[in-house]
Amino acid sequence: METQINRIVNIDRMENAIALFGSFDENIKIIENEYGVTIISRGSELRIAGDPEACAKAGSVVESLLALVSRGEVLSEQNVRYCIALVNDGTQEKIEQLAGDCICITSRGKPVKPKTIGQKKYCAAISKNTITMAVGPAGTGKTYLAVAMAVTAFRAKQVNRIILTRPAVEAGEKLGFLPGDLQSKVDPYLRPLYDALFDMLGAETYNKYLERGNIEVAPLAYMRGRTLDDSFIILDEAQNTSGEQMKMFLTRLGFNSKMVINGDITQIDLPSGVRSGLKDAVKILKNIPDIAQCTFSGKDIVRHKLVQDIVKAYEHLGARNKIQEAR
Image (cartoon, rainbow, N blue to C red; front, side):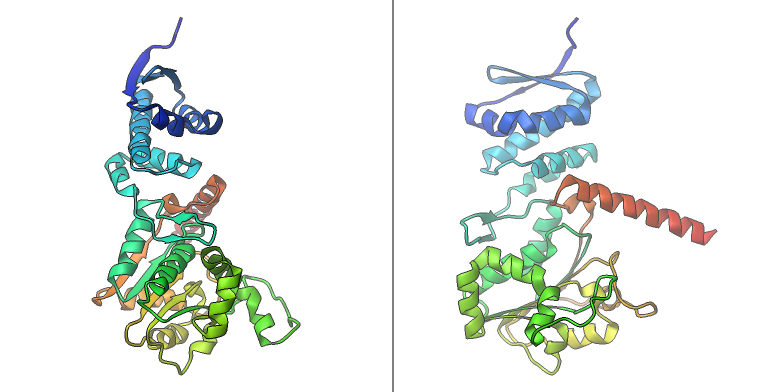
């Protein structure tokens, strides 16, 4: 006996159906596996069979994805899983906000767009405010989107320089003495920033702007004593700054400049007993106008699905440890 059809979704255009299904029906398979339903294509209809409640949720996900496709979005596994998460939370109305404007075009012609509600709010905050502070787990696009916004501002001649910096703190391991000149010694710490810039500009254009002084990638210690006018300044891995370093950095702000400060307070690599400057700054600067604060969650992670699972597992471990300490 066939499973009862509990939901029917109409598709107006065949190209939308093709985009919805994806290569080898991979998008539909994700939805079927999530809800334990069967999705069958019959002409201009999608018929969803299974448990009534599961069919209702699967239908909502399908309709949300079709809405994204109709606005020109290209679906990926990340889009599908994010829509599933919003539907499961009962917040599928937010999906309408997802079809964001293109922020930047990479050197390979790929458009850079916010992929989650959190990312969209983050980009809007950067546009509207002089200083934006973003806290969230790895993989939420904090650095990549900030660099995209910086390149956009630079191309539009809103700023004359892009300055990328991060504290040179080792991630829980001692690397010892590194060979080469000073730049060679600090380059390993700055590699994620180089990677994002290369992607946006291409190596040749990046090197041209670097020689002209339009782009600067340097450790945080190099910022001391400077006033940064007409610049877009990004501080990455800000959780590894001390309170004194954070204050020093914030007071470098000059006229017609923007600052973006990113960090993950669950990955602090400072020596024991040293408080994170990012943690303090989030509290101290909370109610100051023109300083925005954005918080990303695990749902905003746009890397491999396993990254979300790993972050969740560590969050659960941290919560359990806090309960045990309280006892």
